[in-house]
Length: 335
Image (cartoon, rainbow, N blue to C red; front, side, top):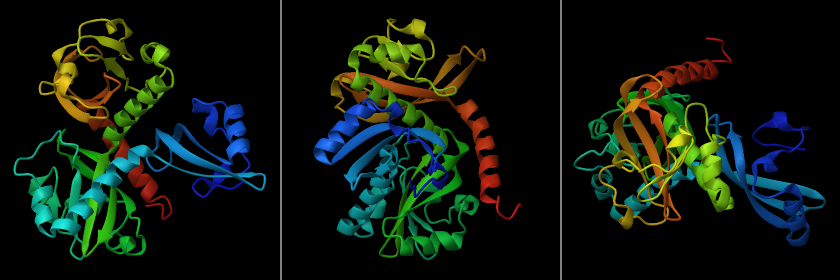
């Protein structure tokens, strides 16, 4: 009846529960009994153009269901930016040295950065030390002008999102990047996630969601390929063996190679919810050559869930991503 994000859905049947682990009847029964309910499902995020897990609050009032949801994946970036702001509130400008490491780690999950709100000079960066004390050139390739990037956060206390091209320090390739920024005390605190990274992280999120809803069949679903997305696939392992493989199902049951978890990860030291990146050279059966693969891992229920992508493939896809980005950004004036 109304949609504040995608108005074109008005008048269309509601299908958000089609990918939920709960039936429509079950959700409606709880709504009638309690007046409200949380549901989790996959939904095409119009901001990222990726199917992602979404958590939505449904509220029954006057015979109508009102709802609002959020993408947990987006909160990875938002929490990093908010944490940087809180660190600054506690330590002042000394926080900038804490945010900026002495030695860069391209596999770090800390994509935090801080800009001078007036000049947009980089004063701290969690992964790209070389950008500190410079004006980042990547904001010139954003879906907002530099002036809008300065001004919009002033009227949005909850921060704003910006799309722009940026160099991923891990892959050393330019990728379309989604950055969350928030203004505080003359500085812009932000964090970024590249689109190729968003895609594989979303695959892992949905894989864990699927396993958690039905652990008895979760591994079979992974190996069936049902959770694969384009050229991305999930994998599940324990400390010794591959338990499920969406790309090559025949690998399920085989001994887990060292590169599956990375050389520096000790399984007995992991805690529930730990996550990390790895990057390794591997022989790609689809191209017949050795390539660099980047993968996202999450430790859940004593298992490791992961999804990889090939850097060369992502680099090529990023060219198309950017072309589409330019087209969408200039659609109105037909440039």
